[in-house]
Length: 103
Image 1: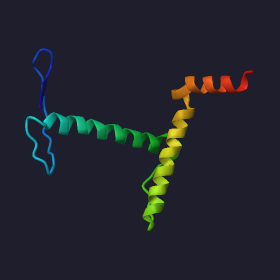
Image 2: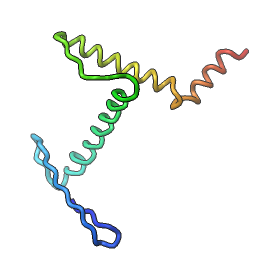
Image 3: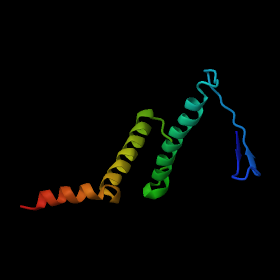
Image 4: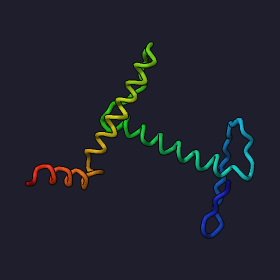
């Protein structure tokens, strides 16, 4: 992949390696490499938010697989509830509180 500046002077080249059981060709490279990579990037950003915004979300160790899955599920639910009640959904919160308390 090459990127050149507006004047065409600077060139940036990068190489990537892909491991896949399905062959990558010109027809599927954009969907498989670019679009899937972006989806993974969005997932990782959400996990980083959970780790660094007050949850102290870390890798856990347990001999019980169900306990680990339950811990991660509860952390995701807590994050969703916090987002729902936070400023991101402020409009919905005021409508709900206004309808409940007004006669």
